[in-house]
Length: 71
Image: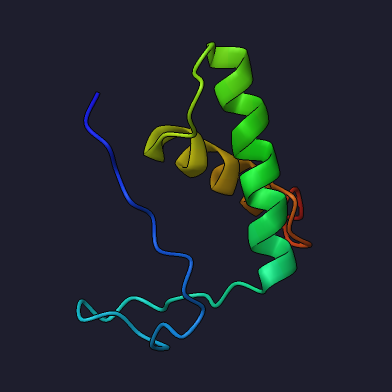
């Protein structure tokens, strides 16, 4: 698989060029996402964290936010 570099910079603009809002991530939240991504990679049998693992971890972290499950 090709190697993918993931930027962890927290200085992203408040909105993307397409007009969508961009959420800033604290270093501790990013560390938690990396830990979840490492677990997902381990379960997948991968020695490296790939972009798909990190994406899945971030999706799981988004479920953990306060508004999840509210109607």
